[in-house]
Length: 400
Image (tube, rainbow, N blue to C red; front, top):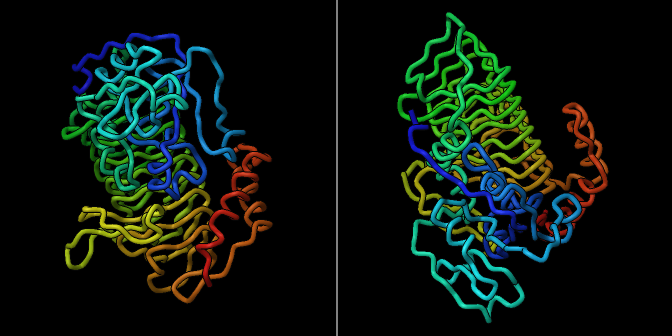
């Protein structure tokens, strides 16, 4: 069982502020249009939640328009930590020992300091250990397997899983499966021999679902009947999944509930893929996938052979939509119709292969309010301001 590895954490009372490195934040667009870098989920937990497990409470230094939803906590004992970095025992130990006039770096990249304004005058210490940093959108799914394993150990240490007592569910590698309370599992096949499977509170795994670890189903998520869940994926919280999914991360409140393939992909929050939507994750010539890089305002070689769909929050696809390899979709876009759309679809786009128009804010707000209300989440002024700001920031991309 993966929980045989023991981690010991010393909780320190310190005001941890997770800051957005500007270059990394831009590299992680469109996911970071609507959240700080540290709010990206990789593994079972968000990066911010991984730090909370070590330091109890964290806050964010992010874009001004995001600060109403993600505020920064002021304190005299603040330590700023790069929000793209996943914590490790060695890294936490070094951060705990940083003096006020010291800063921690990995090469030319700032990892932690006490004063961002005075960091150039600080004594620089190099971190020589292995650094896990989410600085490209494709790293969200590429790092997911190892982060599921680490988070699994962290969340299950010293705890006992709920029993899987359904007589029609077949389990392999039961020692690597952890089930939280009030989860339901019926007539499923769960194989955790090659990686852990985490089943969160109130998760519903329905009849005929096939799950191959590593896998994480976060609280309140649903695995629909007959789903084929291939390894190294994360779903939720409160997301629905079906069809075939491989090495993908589906953020909270998003649905890929029908038949169709999703591989090596990341979906933001409040997304929906219609029935029989498919994403290609491999080029026909087996070459490296090029993705839109917002830092370059053009395409850059990812160095990855497998890369599918990257979709920002609130975006949706109609039935039978086809996404080409390495497609990037912005925030609050609606894609539909036959044929392959372009492999960069700007935020607030409405259309498909036949052309696009602008999805106007009035309609965006109406739909977002209805969608969120169904999940008992309030679409408040902070959410409206975020979408309106992103709408204005991305106007230059809508060139039709």
